[in-house]
Length: 192
Image (cartoon, rainbow, N blue to C red; front, top):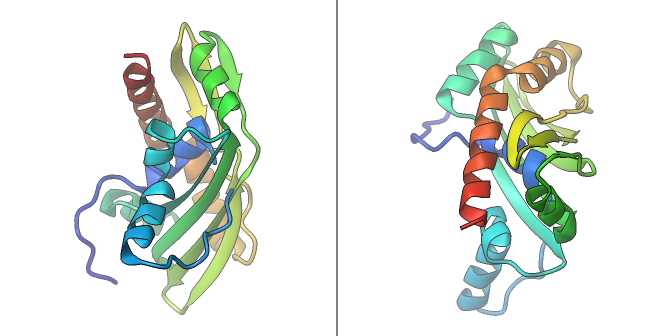
């Protein structure tokens, strides 16, 4: 297993981001200078896109790693077969859909599916998988009250790995609670 530094819960925010403000982009061409490279990296950051971006479409990359707690739960669900996973979600959504979801007090937000590519490390080998998130967030009185990431069945993955992970992601109270907390924190900041 890799030596992992403590990080904020990055697996849950991908669900949150996908659920609340989903985004599909083509990576930019190689930058000509270090300054351009830094600028492109900032502009591809999903949180920068949400808070500072002004384009009609919010396009960004969202790298994801599970927290140690999430990894422990997924390892238990897969009976120790899964060792580690890291993913990248390439997200794209019309800014007007996000604005509508934020500005409408009672609303159900269901953006189009967003592609996710992961590398899964098991006890036998590492391999790529792909799936999508099609989140659903219910807003009532201007606040998120229900949320699910809507993870679709992965491709190129065995059922022993895909079924328990998908079930946990789509039904976890921890993920729903985190999605709701983060969405509502963003709404509070957005409305200031």
